[in-house]
Image (cartoon, rainbow, N blue to C red; front, side, top):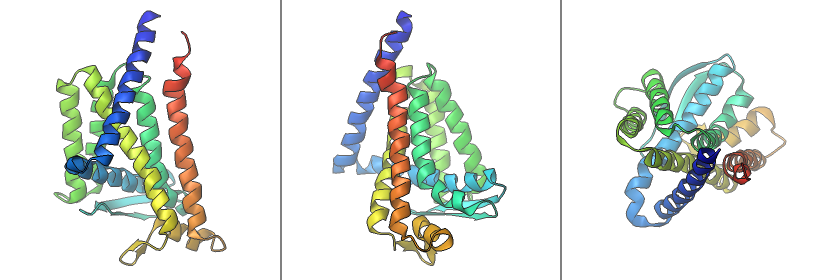
Length: 237
């Protein structure tokens, strides 16, 4: 079982390194050029969450857009709206949590990078407009992940995937914190998810309540992933 213990130790060290990288990216203005595409990637995942929730609940996912300022809109029809509306923020947190768990528990990060690249490319080709911002984000990250699969060693692959997972999960939580204090924010005539949920399903409860509920769910998902992938596995084999 020595190799298992070594893998756990390596996963812990790389996860800590990823935390350091994310902290630097978030707090050093000189690296804003790297944070910008990552922020667009989180929006890509957010809007994909709405669309996939529509498909899973019997509806249709027509397309989605990502704007250069980091906002986005998904166009869906049918499905279960009370699941679709929170699926953007919660879906991004779930994506981050699941990816973090898989990277730090499965010993084939390069294969995970390839699988994720295929999924991103499929979503991009099916649900975005050719050469739109969403298209460029999806295909751009798919190409990067293919390069990771082809050329990176396991440690670098784990680091890159961990950073993507953390950025996705943490951005989802931070966006929800922002939404708590800015529940009137909208894009044109399109209200934000919490405001739409409150208006359609629980008009007696203000949007801030739903933003807080979704934020709590996102935090629980992330903490659960960290516990089961890192903390629990630190116990002796």
